[in-house]
Image 1: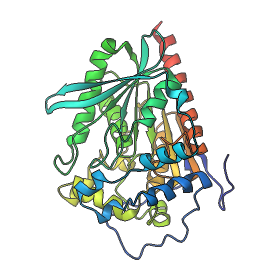
Image 2: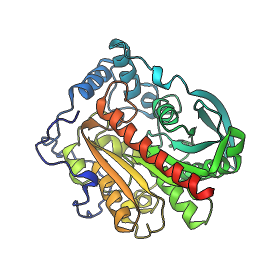
Image 3: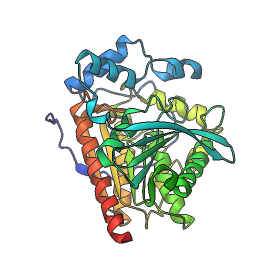
Amino acid sequence: MFRPLSRPLLAASFLVPALALGAFTASAADQSSKMAKPTAEMQAVLDELKALKAKPVSTLSVAQARMQASPADAAMLVQLQKKVSGKPDAVVTTKDIAIPTAAGNLPARVYTPAGEGPFPVIVYYHGGGWVIADLNVYDASPRALAANTGAVVVSVDYRHAPEFRFPAAHEDAWASYSWVVENAGSMNGDSRRIAVAGESAGGNLAANVALEARDKKATQPVYQLLVYPVAGKDMETPSYKENAKAMPLGKADMAWFVEHVFKDKSETEDKRLNLVGRTDLKGLPPATVVTAEIDPLRSEGETYAKHLADAGVKVNAKTYPGVTHEFFGMGSVVPEAREAMDLASSDLKAAFEAARKQGN
């Protein structure tokens, strides 16, 4: 299923050195000539996204960015055109709930697989740069995770910027995780077998929940699934230069998100954003780190995986060739997305089984 690359693909990319950290800036002089060619399946989604008249978020207002078609919409249309059935995930049932926090109720969606339980639990955080997207846009990934792992997945929304700037989303991520730990039983879940997962901005939230659980000596997740996580503040990494003009996420788009999330550029130094700059990664749960070749965030995700491994954390990291940011939830139409979901699900199931045996 993998197409040949002009350069060798490094699992986990652990040979990439730690990168000098720069400021969040976008330059018109960035070169994207080295950007890889998408696979045919990935290109079909990008073509559909273009046909839906989706524009780079960097050219839009927040309201416009929230209203326009998403990559998930494009993937759904490709699925319909190819008459691909979503039957494998039909065994999952859903229920929308509200999670009470000090900042107010947070919308959440509970995905329950077939079976009797009690089930393992995954707390999932969606992407969108902490500014756009919601539970509906990111429905495919938690649904597939529930179907493939046999776990209850709680997909959590959080306060968005610019209405609620950093660190509001991070505070909500921890508050919702704590609530799920305390209330897992009401969802036929087992809090002794709990994992965190997230994509993009949500991958950053999941990583921070694992760090906060360790630091607070609270119930620690048994596993963390980090899918192309936001993990650094440097916009001059190799992947930013290669994919400056990539769809659906380019360098200017990331700068746009940062402008709307942080009150001041100095806040990007915060260790919750700049994960690759941290030196306190020991004692964290094992992780699967999924990155995409055609993605500005690839380098920082690969670097964070390396730093986790250097700190003694068990890491399974893989960069998928020929696919872009947002590919993970497109398993119905993009083969690499199915492979990534299979990898993540296998790792999560193994962690849940190990936790079950340890608890007996």
